[in-house]
Structure formats: C-alpha cells, structure tokens
Length: 95
Image 1 (cartoon, rainbow, N blue to C red):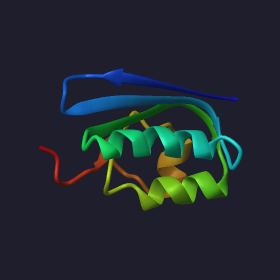
Image 2: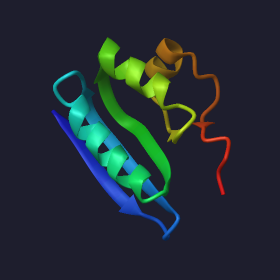
Image 3: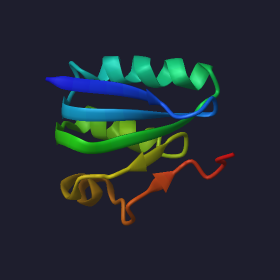
Image 4: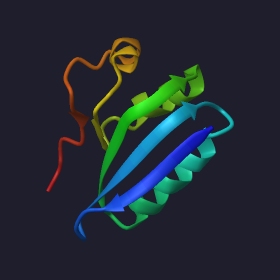
C-alpha cells in the first residue's frame, strides 16, 4: 500500500511525502502527483523517509527524475540501492 501526502509550502514549492510500498502498481499514482506539480512549475521536495519497499521499476523512475526534484530523508536501503551518498540530492536549479 502506498500513501502520498502533498504539503504546500509556499507558492513556489511543494513537499510530497511518500510512505509504504512503491512498486509497479503504485508508481502511476506517484507519477500523476509529480506531473501535476511539475505542470505548475513548482519546486518539488520528495520526502521518502516512510518508504518501506521499492521495486526495480520504481527505483529506475526515481533515478530518472533525480535532476527534476529534491529527494530528502532517504531510507538507508534506498541510499545504497540508488547510489545516493548525501541526505539531499537533485534539483540543481532551485530558485
């Protein structure tokens, strides 16, 4: 089961909190949420501290968008699997 919570910070950014299992069945839900915020040209902060499981397809998706969003609070297993070394990564063109 996947839980996604959008928390609007200010008019320029949004926090997307992801909890549970991210797999091929739940991935379209996350894609839809992120695409909606991208269309509004918001800076997207993706908090993944509640992520318990991720499959290969979802992992590949997160790697593909790592320059478009900022990942925060990554679980240790995800840092290792995806090669993230720091606590935050992504979005080099934040405003």
